[in-house]
Structure formats: structure tokens, C-alpha cells
Length: 194
Image 1 (spheres, rainbow, N blue to C red):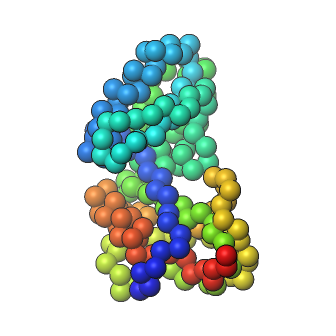
Image 2: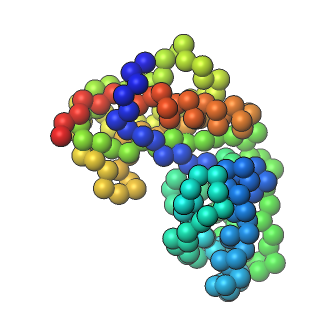
């Protein structure tokens, strides 16, 4: 497989706090600290967005807060990672101020991670996926936003993507291992221009 990286994917993954402590230490404390300082009125879904300054550290930078659910990439990641529907939560907390968010008992048993590939300068050559001989154990689903021959410019916003790769596995660690391997070893086939 070609090792040259032209398009680095962005991982979208939802996790309960107890499953992300190794990658995001003290994340719950950061969120509680923000909420305690800003004292948002209830009942609302209060979104806190931050940026981890260095991988696997508790050094976070607050970037945004909002009274809304996540966007089109965040809400599915949350649901497939935690079994919690942000849409249900926001509606339910307005109907009942004492509503307690809980996992959907009908949520899928598998975990889904998303790798989003932003557009780059060039033309998409084909929609080839990962070779069958790769060490991937997860089920993969490709959602292409560009067709072969379509010219692209480098992404200017968070809506400029050429591919969303969905990675499904019953085992979270296997899904994460596959996502890491894919991010390192796979890029869509693009003829680049500068």
C-alpha cells in the first residue's frame, strides 16, 4: 500500500468517561469545572467543546459552549459510543425538568467510529477502499461525498469532506486499533495539483 499521506483523517468517536480516561485524563473534571464557573440554567443540554493541547494529557483549552446538541458528526458518534441520543435528551429535558439521561436499551451492541477525510487539492481518482488483505477486523462502510473525476480544493470548513469511513466492531479496542491502522496506512486515491 502507498505510504505517502495526502489526506489525514479526523476521528469522531463517542465514549463514556470511564472508557476515555487513558486518552483524555481528567476530562470529566474539566467539564464540571466549566459548568460550575458558567452556571448554565437548567433544564438544557449544555455542550462544552474543548481542545486537548497535548495528546494524553489533562491540558484542555475551552473553545466553545452552547445550549444545543452536537452537529451532524457529533450526535451519531455519541449515540454509537454511549447509546445516548442527544436528540432524545434535549426534547425530554424540556418536557420534564427532572429527566435523567439514560442509555437507549435498543442501541446497537457494536461500537462505531468515524474517520472523516477532508478535501485536498486534486481530483478523486477512484473510490477504492482498503485492501481485503489488510489486518482490519472491523466492518467498514464507505460514505463518499465526491465522485471519481471530481475536482476538489483544500477543505476550508468542517463541511468539506470527501469521505466518511465508518468502522464497526463489537470490541471497542479492536475498533480503535483498526482506526489507528487505517489513519496511518490508508488515504483516498487523489491526483494532486498545487
